[in-house]
Image: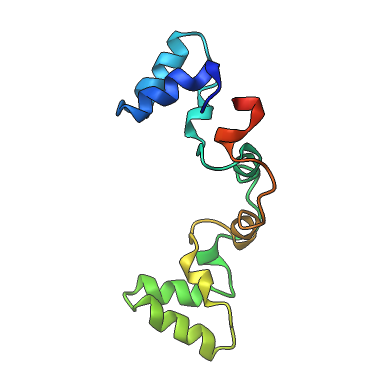
Length: 127
């Protein structure tokens, strides 16, 4: 965010220009990799790169253990009713239903791990 190379483009976004306009300006200025603008300046670079790793395992809505509960929600039952059914069936962690059903459980649990790097806006590499 504070890197002199990218500061101009983050400021464009902060001033209200669409992100695509800032990316176009980067390309115009000869910066090919505009993906830095897709990152959250409040999180560390390390944590954001880790989340882009290959997703493994079945997506939650297709996971045999949780498929039944996501289907309940899809059919219109309240999320709390599905959470109650999970508890009734012996699954204690009903927060699974708050996760993205289009991603695997493993990939979403990996993103919850403790973040050890500095936040991106304070990372010396990008200052």
